[in-house]
Image 1 (cartoon, helix red, strand yellow):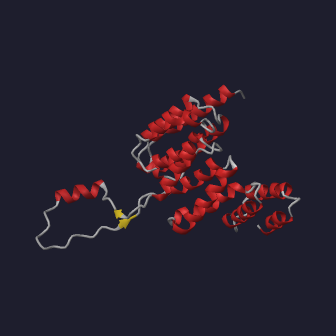
Image 2: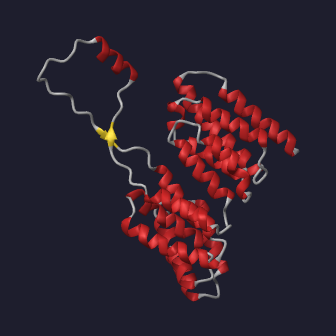
Image 3: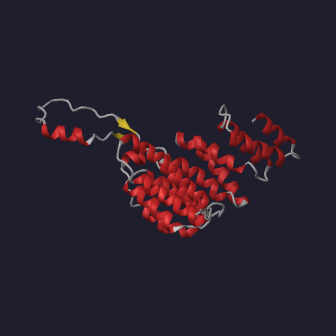
Length: 278
């Protein structure tokens, strides 16, 4: 099948799924299928900055309600969009600006994913600093917003009597997923150059000590990107980090990577032994 036919099939799948039905159950199915279709298009047209696909994905993100964007599958849509700009650096600026117009927390995650893919391996110091700035943000708890129906009922009801105690609303933590992607983005951007990779490892050391829980969990994934590093100590720690992340999962993809690492490091007894432990 030619690339043009694949493009038409993928985009038509997105359009068909987006306009098929408004039932809640089907909306969940749509989120699943739409996200996988977006990710597939990202893999097929990686690094192509295809305008038609980009426009369709942005339209889908803008038109879906909070329920659709709250689904975990929405992150795959962000990754599919990022793959279209893999290695293109400043060519992603327009798309990032359009993502800022989406009034949902997934917007910030998508911006980070697109920027990380665009500058992957570029060792751009300014972009690394920008990602670390996202990690420095302290997210405070806030009161849970009442549903629209509850607000209407409160307006219709009688005013509360004087001296009556106000109901204490439960505190919830806003979405902090973007910080996990920012940590991985630091490794993805800095891994193209030896000095940058060394500096990022020092930053990971500080993040492990002072970062939020979601940041500390993501550091292991970020270090895992350095499993083929020329520095023996870095490679050993990265391989061990892969084992900690995938412990008990029997993940086929990780098993394949470990077999490749065993062949890559067969001359290094330490790395080969670490692979066997993992």
